[in-house]
Image (tube, rainbow, N blue to C red; front, top):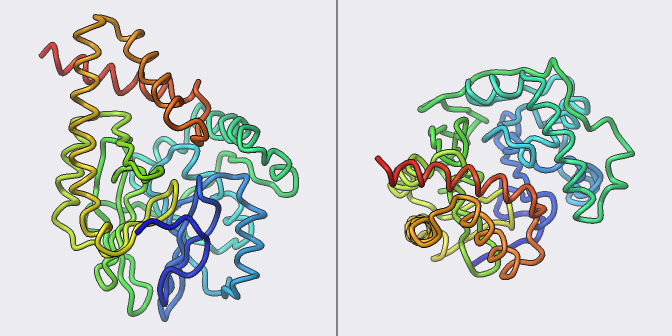
Length: 299
């Protein structure tokens, strides 16, 4: 079953934000962990939800960045300035990216663009939400654990959506947090998102298929529970295979990277007119994906 509603998922797990972009709060006896960083325009939304839900903000001591794309780190500066002692966690590659001026500029400019698309530009004016140099934290890698006291989160390296992607898994409750590395639950479909390296993305899905998943916690368009959650990675693997076959077919038919990208973008917004990202950003993502698959076809 899919849900996009903010609130308590189970005893110690919350979904916060809006349907197009959410974050998770996982509670333990020793403290709470924010998982993923969402979009910056969600700051007043999340602030209000925490108050309405009675969440104990004093227990929030850690935040895990699953990858460094702008739509997954937007709230990190907000939370770090709200909780100065907050420990930040990310992969080594993510920290490498987030130290660059180009990445910081992209995060801030794309965040403004999407806020405008979603009719929430006014949300950016009430707090200091922009990324600047100087944010840093601890590095996580395959096998790293974060112990919240009775609740443990294990890190898995799952590159492919991005070069810096990690997933988090809480085995005690069967909750998987793959960010965009597990397929996006848009509507009734699953949208594969192997942006940087589609082959590694597919391998990472196979890696995740070995986990017992009772709650699939996506960053975009909510979370999945019940029998659908148990089968979700298998369905993501199938969707990724179908998407790759489609791109390969378009490349063979058109003989053109540009024509293939244009077809994919047009089809995406014909089927999903309300999708979060503006078409110009999606075009850049598809270009990266198609370029990788085209190179693999010529090997």
